[in-house]
Image 1 (cartoon, one colour):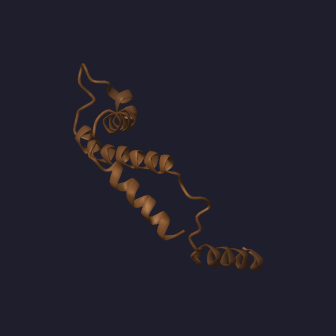
Image 2: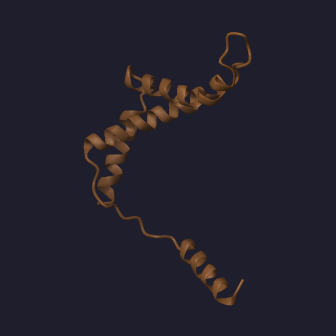
Length: 108
């Protein structure tokens, strides 16, 4: 490496290490915050379901084999979205939405 390349690399590393101030480009509307709350709840449910499905075998005669193994994470994500949308889910969406809107008011 040349000296100029080393100095450029060091300069880039120092720039990425300096924290940038948090700036909000726009305030989220209530609808956007609600949608984000529901997405968070679906992601949380997916993380809770994943260990349960990881223990199921995929190599039996009536199992999906390698295809099931590859696409299982997508199936679990869709189950989680369905649980969050069609029912009460775990009740996380509303508190997360309220917290997001409250934090937005404080930082405005």
